[in-house]
Amino acid sequence: MPAPSLALTGTDGKPLGLERFHGKVVMLAFGFSNCGEVCPITLATLAGARKKLGAAAGDVQVVYVTVDPERDDAAQMRKFLGSFDPTFIGGVGTRPQIDSAQKSYGISSSKIVHADGSYSIGHSSSIYLIDRTGRLAAVMPYGHPVDDFVHDLKILLRG
Amino acid sequence: MSRPFRITLLLPLVALLCALAWAGFTPIHVASREKLFEIPRGTYARRMAGDKVEILPAKIRLTLGIEDILLLRNLDEVPQVFGPTIMMPGQSFRLPFERAASYQFVCSAHASGQMTIEVEDEPVMPWERIRWRVREWREKKAG
Image (cartoon, rainbow over all chains, first blue to last red):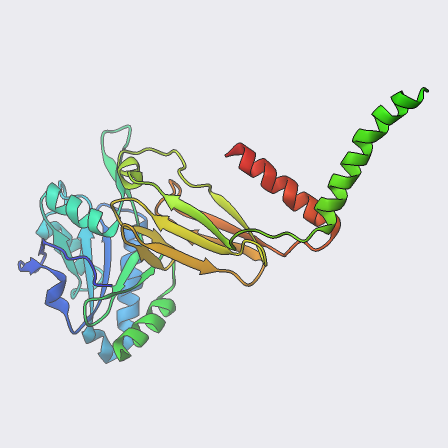
């Protein structure tokens, strides 16, 4: 099944569509830079998987799309993602563009407003694995260790 | 005790015993081993609106040899994630089970994001069959 397309802007300044990464295995996830729990763990896990792959990591691209376009611009996401792995590319855009991307992958999110007026966002946290031809190969639920990703990535890289 | 009065008392007792004997000794047959659950249209919209109402049961019970295949159908207009798979609008996902155990899956149709599948062994003893049939009847009655 072809992975649903994206029409966003990458944190590298280029248009972000998945066709850009054909030939590579893509790990796609959604989150936001002010996330204090799930996103840092997910990103650290994905960075760990790339590191463990060694030279093969060059064929693996992490794409992390914000669910908080009001606060996450390209610079903010670039800084956030760069603290985990400088090769990670973030997806940013307008609220309608982000809504459309979320809907394409069934990513739900809801704003949680705190007493001091600040907010966080609860969101779906699965990671989508897309093969070299742009087909959606698997969905990895949140919480899997680095080795599970390495295992699946090796299979996808061989294919 | 008069004879008609004894018969009046005995008849329901005999009927109950017959029903229990049937329920306990007759093997269970169902039309399909698939247990279907449909994710209705509008589920994603409700989740996005912050609706916490459970649309599907949080726990689904399957029985080996009788109803041991989970069939999920996505009738929503948005993809839904179940375990390691993504169901596009209109798609179904069929998952057979072969071992009795409790299984946890990520499920985007649930407010909690989790679904539990309890897979039980096939009831073979009479009281197990009776318990299974009573539970099924109560579940169907509850809708």
